[in-house]
Length: 225
Image 1 (cartoon, helix red, strand yellow):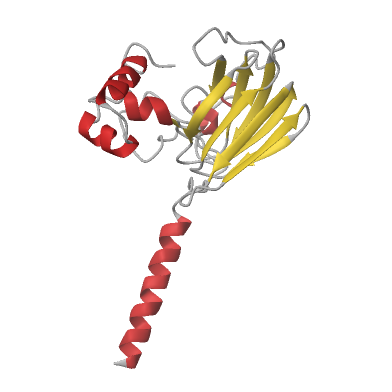
Image 2 (cartoon, rainbow, N blue to C red; image 1 turned 180 degrees about the vertical axis):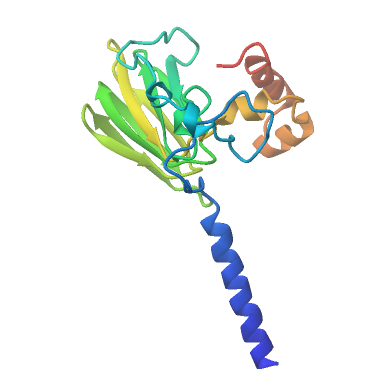
């Protein structure tokens, strides 16, 4: 009986380790796997383009990351993503990039990347940045300046805010997935399709229904960030 218990424990440990090992983007089994976006095949990721048809252009993207983006919106920020969706050469490489522009006092609202850790570098300006851990929800935050680097661990709620009232700010982020995904917390809760029940939100946030109705009106389908 003791031997069986030991075997069962060992099996569970192996299973847990295996699940952890596949929790991130898989390592490539070849030099590259440029995504074939036109393929009808559906896999966890994207199928490979025939390597004989791959050219240098598949590993290049004229992203114009040196150009300022439009931040005229409610939150005063603009995120330009460069991932496998618009850069097929990143397929299976486990990395992507983003440029983030902030208007004066602009905010990149609290959000989550479910599949990636993010490493942010401030290119211009001064930002207040931070992330919140899983329960009991400890906040780690810091004011960062040009040239500073801050890391947001995978799947943690995080944010950035430009502290300058007069000047824009710019940051660039490297993310540890070809397709990190993003869940903006407020939009997900109050602007989902179909909407989350008012009864659930009233109970969860301990506010009156009219507050929930107003919040939903701010994050309706045609009124997202």
